[in-house]
Length: 206
Image 1 (spheres, helix red, strand yellow):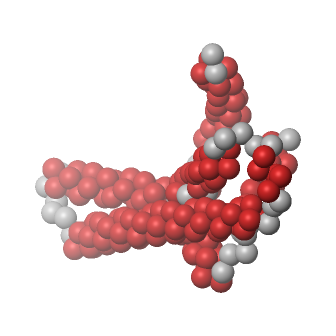
Image 2: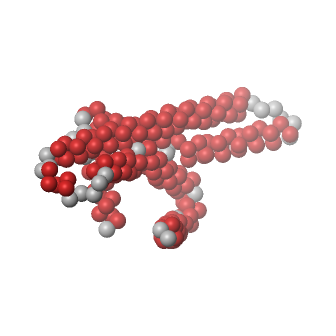
Image 3: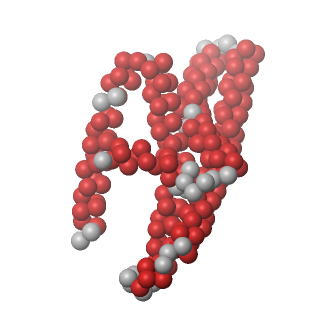
């Protein structure tokens, strides 16, 4: 049932006949949210290498030898690479937040217009069977729920998943034994999330 609902979610994003510009915004938001999760694990690896370089330079100076230009050049290049990756991540995060916010707003507007068009086609007797304020309530509440579920939260979720995958790829490249051991945390995390969400939903509804 859960996977069936997830399978219908992409159809919701392209519902109500989106334009080419809206489809392009959706594609850019999806691509930038995937790309925004990649730099941070790489920054962690480069920062660790930078600390190793600092440590080797400090040890060589304490032993009486000066730091050569190659070590200084390596440190400078790693610092610049970290800065460039940080700038790229900032731009990608800004892009995916902007694109997904626009996607959610435009989707809500299209669904609202489609809903009103369908209401105007109904017979007058259709509204006689509805409670007072039902049409306005559904128009406001349901569309706002759809907008909140298709806005920047989608980009954050995709970015977090991309970060998760990239982190494990980097971990397997650097130390596959330790990464394989850490995979056991994944089912434990999902189990904790499902159990916790079940009890939160149970006691919140009381």
